[in-house]
Structure formats: structure tokens, C-alpha cells
Image (cartoon, rainbow, N blue to C red; front, side):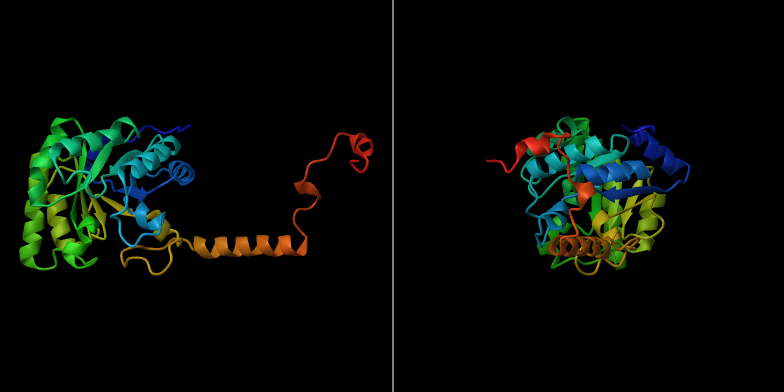
Amino acid sequence: MSTRDKVTLTTLLERKRSHQKFAVLTCYDYTHALIEEEAGVDAILVGDSAAQVILGHSTTLPATMDFLVTLAGAVRRGAPGAFLIGDMPYLSYHVNVEDAIRNAGRFMAEAGCDAVKVEVDGGMVATVEALARASIPVCAHLGLRPQAVHMAGGYRAQARDAESARRLIGDARAMEQAGACLLLLEAVPPEPARIVSEGTRLPVIGCGAGPACDGQVVVLHDMVGLTNGAAPRFVKRYADMRTEMARAIGAYLAEIRSGVYPATEHWYSMTAGEAAKLGDGS
């Protein structure tokens, strides 16, 4: 059980007001959630990136509501003290407002999330307003939107010219007016990110958006070196767990093949005198 105070939206708002940075990580299972909880991670995002990291897809698009709600519930059980954000997957909020409310409500009611994340632009104001009216806290995700990867022509940094940066800033303001509780900026230069962060009362989470954001989020597997290939340029690798796990697995294989494992200390003994009664089993 967690021994720390529960991190809530009020906690994050107070961090914003007092200029205290907060840390966010992705998580997709109970075991890693326990570790993040013990470390004191402020907020956890159960991201649709699970489609890539966990299932091996090339994009986030195959993630489903059932899949992510199941993962979010596991993470909640492992990290009861963290602020938990469920990531609304592709087509879970695009078709109509009713679907958006119903699906977002599943994250809140079934998984115990504290908020949902929705990839947005200026055209999503009505959806964010409807979710807010339904008492569902929304983290509005702006900048690079992985669910729109095909429209964007790939994973590209956004708001790199003045016109698109002004559009991003305007969309952020529109999301705040629509009732969003948090903003997330992905792959955005620090200049527009600073304007957004300084111009809103909402906590702003950066994902490759520079140092002015109130919090930072990266994919856990990227940060500890578990993913295959290069991580995004904004990710600092704090460990090389992939190499360490490969070493451990290699040692396990070698000991099994050589007969070193299992040794005496790894098996169970019969009660004294019972082995003799067993004989050869005939």
C-alpha cells in the first residue's frame, strides 16, 4: 500500500503556482507501477504508446479501449498514490460526443483514472467542453499528435514557424476555455511552449517541449533503455536495462545448459525418511 499522500489535480495546480516541477512517466502494467509508486512519480500516463511498446505495432492506432482500460486498472492497483491519466485511443472520441463521454467514463469508473488525455486541435473544442460538463478532467494533447501521424506525414516536430506556433498557442487557450484541466505539448520548440506555459493557469506537461513546461513526460521503456533502436532526441537514457536483461537471460541459459542451475538450494526436499519409503516408485 502507498504511504504517500495522493497526488490530485489540486496538487498539480499548486505545483504550478509555486513553480515546482513535477515528473510524469508512462506505465502499462502492475509491476512497473509498483516501482514508479515506490520512486514517488507524481503522475503516470497509461499511453496508447502501449500499442508500440507492448504489442509491437508501428503506430499507436491499434490500441483499443478494452486494452487500455485493462492496463490502466493494473497501473492504478500498483500506483494508488500517483495522478493517473488514461489515454483515449484512436476513434474512441472522434465519432461523436456521446462516444467520447462513454469511453472516457470507462477510464474513470473502471480503471480509477484521475483524468483522460485527448489529442486535440481547435476543432475539438466541443468534445472537450462535453467531457468537462460530464465532470471528466481532460488533459488536452497538442503539438505532435501520434494518432494523426498519417495526416502529418510522419512523426515530425510541430510549431516550428511563427504561423503554426501562433496556431498552437491559440489552440491551447481554446482548450483552457473549453474546460481542460491539463495541457500536454509534444515535440514543440521551447519558445511557443514557454508562451503557453506562462500564459495559462493549467499545469503544462512537456514531451520534448523544452524546460519551461511545468512537468515532463517520457516513455518509461525509452528512459531505461528497454526499447529497440534509438529513442526520440528529447529522451535522456538513465539506464541500459536492455543490456542488463540480456546479460541475465544469457547467464540463465548458460547455467541451464551446463547443469549448474538448478542447484540444491533451488529445489524442495521430501520430509525426512519419506524418500526411502518411495523407493524407485514401483
